[in-house]
Image (cartoon, rainbow, N blue to C red; front, top):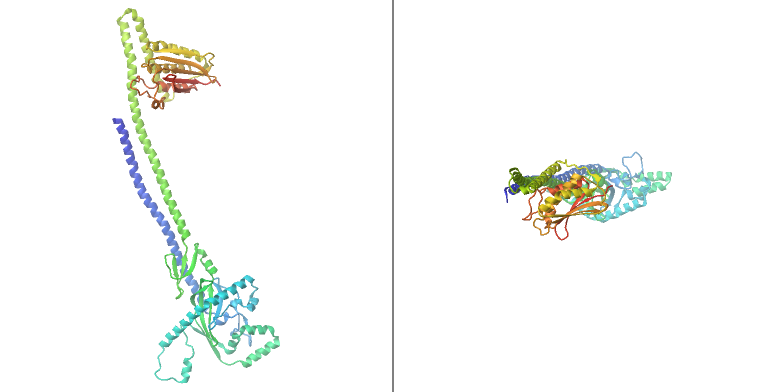
Length: 606
């Protein structure tokens, strides 16, 4: 490996290092930053979902507390389809439709219900036929829905009643335990007072006159009777009711509304329940929370949200503080997290695309630098080779010129051969002219100033003249030229000087490469082909190897055989350039019987 090759290898190694170090650093820093941003995207989605969950749980807790506090003030008799309003202005028997028989005014309430404490039988204010007729004509499907809800509530109310009774018993036991125990037997009157129910925590007492209480007991039947009887009969009923009315008040103990979990159609449902104690026994009153109302409440969150029983299990669940019942808000953040993960993947893909694109560009630039260095070194070698070849090509004819001119000038040698000496001087001068012409032609080609002026003319005369001009010199070198010109060669466009230079270079090239051949005949032919003309020069040399053919018309390309003749490697370059400038083409093929054959095809005139 010479110094110039070492320079190219060193440039390659330095370029690889110059590219590898920043690219590796860029990848490490960029991939870490892309990964950080990707994690930030997913973490942001998780945090947003968690914050949404906490916010919705807080808002729902406040909403449910407000709803419970408002419904806790509702009197117990509203849960009947019909009731007598003790605060009404009418006297005697008066019954009206319950406001709960209508559709719930609050969108969170699905239905109101009342259950008998002894039998567990459930009634819905809105399910009463008389109430429905008074409020509105309901569709059949709605009636079926109310009937279905009533059936499902009766199935699930038993466990609720058991729990309520147990809780009431525990509260009474706790309250009694806090009272001091009398050390002596108490009078019967005091025992009778202690037998009255005690107010538990959150309970309130509603006082009704006995006449109002009796009307509320059979409000539905009373309402039907009032509708069927005439005005005079209604007055008699009112008078009869007034005569039999007892004096005094009736105490109704209304417990607080508490949140409980009920299972309706196998699904957990949030319900607000209270226990009401009356002289007729205890009843359970309350309402169910509507899933559709909850969906409307959660719709503004922009993500799927559900209310489920139980305690939170992860960050996407938040407890709803509604007493002792464990419920939680569950946020389904799969879509948001999946979108964040897609953005994260797109971010990583974008970084890799930019990185790979940058590496590709940097690699191309680096390879371009290496290629330029290699080309520079190659051109430097070619220049050195060209300089050596030019010096050799110029030294040989100059030496001949000097010798024979000195012999002629000083009268040396055989005087009878003075003509031969003069002929040698002319041949060497012509050879020197060909070298100089090739160098000048290549210079013009490199500068882009190689110009030809093709004109229609007789190519036969130009070829004959060009071959004849060089035939003597070629035969003096030991070769022989055979010229064959076909008849009726058509006129084509060509440049006389360019064709002469093409023929000169092809003949000179054939003579050089046949110096070691046994048959040194050079075949020159001008034939007709495709209405155009074709000039070919063939020899019987060794031909050209395949590795040389790929670069045959490149500057400074010469045969790599050990016995290859000296030369500049510019002749074939000029042949191709001059031919193409005239619209012709140059091809190389193996000659018949071995050797090389170059063909210049001139197209027919348009």
